[in-house]
Image (cartoon, rainbow, N blue to C red; front, side, top):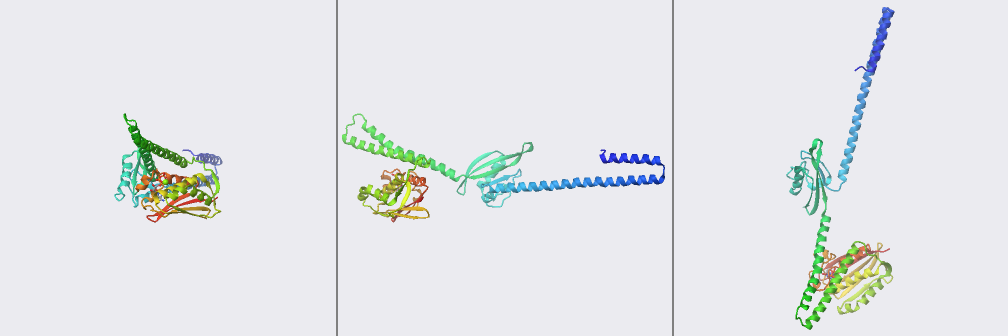
Length: 403
Ligand SMILES: Nc1ncnc2c1ncn2[C@@H]1O[C@H](COP(=O)(O)OP(=O)(O)OP(=O)(O)O)[C@@H](O)[C@H]1O
Ligand SMILES: [Mg+2]
């Protein structure tokens, strides 16, 4: 290609050649040729310089591009490691090309590819399925007591070529647990409702049978129907209240009230029952201790705790202790009754949970009292917990924020 500098050189050369022919003097011709050579040398070096400069510039640009690529890769690695779920990219050869720390922790061994037989088989099976089937899937599996949901995404390179796959594992233990609880709740609720309904249905069938004429049984059955009906009413109301409390749909009418007066009032209201059950109540609360809470809802909690102590604890004494500290009011409700077996203690606040004792079965309760109590205390942003020792007694502890 004729470059600009070359064409200029040819023009200069032609000009000097014509000049030399016109002058016809040897010394001048030699001088002119020397000038020409010098111009040519200068030009040559100038061209070399330009080439050198272009080469250097390309090199610098390449280094800069590499630095940018390294930077982007570092950011990607940081991002992948920050994702709190095991993640791996398996390339088209089956190698773990990119993985984060959580994936390395999941497989527990230093492994390079999906074929490694040292990877525990449930995980290895999933990795192989994802890699070999080349299909997107979502699958759930349980591994070492953790429920995982794994998403496999096949990657496609140019020309529709399979380029390995990416897998993301998500810990869904809590979701699965929630689903199980929901199913159990529906089953329990249906069972609790079906029992009185079946009983009412049976008695009505007998009462309406042709020729039925037994006054005594009629009176007894009507009394039973009324009782079962009240039970149904209580279950439905408790269920509605509990679901409203859980959905934050219950408006708390908070007032400031004196705790000792509140407990004295409750004991006074239940005096007959407590007397019949031969239960003594001791209140250890400072006479000036006040709390800001919904008095009606809190009384529901304490009534349930009283009823429970009367129905199940078979004890002779209930102690109510109040204390303050750390911007909290702590209320302990202590009975010295039968206590609760350690294996059933964690279930006490579950909906419909009733102890295995026949007393708990016969009490007529639906097993919603403590679940509602917990929701009421949590609606106050407080906590309720229980400790118990068999044959020594049970302590319910409530903590409320002091405003
Ligand atoms: N003080 C206690 N001593 C021993 N067992 C208790 C005590 N309090 C509760 N329990 C056990 O906990 C279970 C759940 O109590 P909860 O108040 O939730 O339901 P319930 O009393 O059976 O029915 P409900 O309160 O809805 O009428 C009871 O069935 C009983 O087995
Ligand atoms: Mg109860």
